[in-house]
Length: 442
Image 1 (spheres, rainbow, N blue to C red):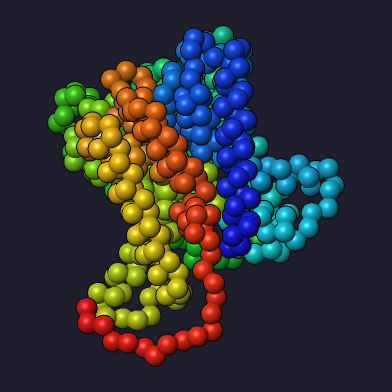
Image 2 (image 1 turned 60 degrees about the vertical axis):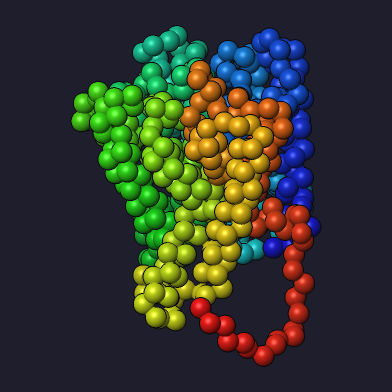
């Protein structure tokens, strides 16, 4: 990972956020007053596909503002440099080696060979998936609204869901559709597909077409970890909230299962909600921070430390406790460097979250668990929130300094922990010097 390339990607997000904030500040983009910090917060949340809001999206922004937010979500979900590169390819502009490197980092692509073909497949896949989701959602919304509105709402929520953004044109998000089967299936599926990563989607497609005989270890790890996290999240939510009359205690068994499924999927990657998270117990919210920080998978639209990092760290711990030095999974050995890198990512992410939570807790003097929940939601670009007592996120209660802290976390989470650290401290200089091995008692 080249420091210069990472800085270019970082600056591309910063510039896009600046442009988005400027557009949202235009008089015809919003209703009522809009401060610079709130415009920056909204633009950052859209570009970083987070979903935290300090303004009521359907009320405080005009149709033009909604279009700006949707465009920021689409470009931010794919990656600004990826979008620019694709446009250059379409114009048949020749790209140099440095451009290919930047594209590789932006897409989390493992190598340089076939990267342009992969990019074209990515765009085609995005178009097909988002269009399919938009059609299904539009048909559902058509029951409640005119055709034009149904189409717009369908496309907006499909793009928002696939990019794991969580922005909604309904003031109560998806709470009005808590018992709606179509909404509770379509939106979570779009979120899951977007969070798996483009490499995984391509492998699954090729495997289904019989052009690939075996799924890679990466794809298997992503699928197994994602599935187990969703099931575990559902089990925890159901066990802790089953008798909570403020959240789901008064629902039928089927309603509870559907609500837990929707919440579990959104816990890790997106900010949609059919339940009021402010009614959840502190224990449930704490468990939620673990799922949020994990996030989605590499190369997808979700944030977090990634499912593969969690999987590698658990595998590493398991084999260490068993006294084995050759960790493996699915009959394939795993590199100790990758496992150590997973440990490092978890440690660095925990450090950033600890410092940010302490700063927010001391400066804002609000409920600690809810502040921690909001911090993790921002860092993992998730977007679920315990709310401000109305329709806005908990961040709406923060001061301008607190909102800047959340903006900082969202940007950090979008480009990645390691990438962000490289931007700050630079890449370590390689050396051929090797010292004698020391023995340290543990």
